[in-house]
Image 1 (spheres, rainbow, N blue to C red):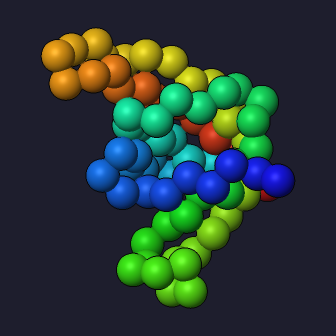
Image 2 (cartoon, rainbow, N blue to C red; image 1 turned 120 degrees about the horizontal axis):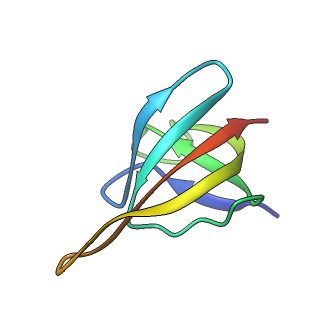
Length: 76
C-alpha cells in the first residue's frame, strides 16, 4: 500500500507539470517510494488523489522551526 500524503500545512506544491510535481515541506519522503498525493478538498471524498513516485528528496532548510525538505515526484 502506498503512503498517503496530504497537501496542506506540512506540505505544499511548488510546481507542477504534466509529468510530475515539485513538493516542499516538513515531511520526509524517500526516493523510490510511491505515494498517493491528496490534493485539495475538505474531505477524502472531495479530494483528488494521484499516485506519484518520489524521484528526489533533500534538505533545503534547517532552523529552529524544524527541517524543510524539497523534491520532485513523477506522476504514475
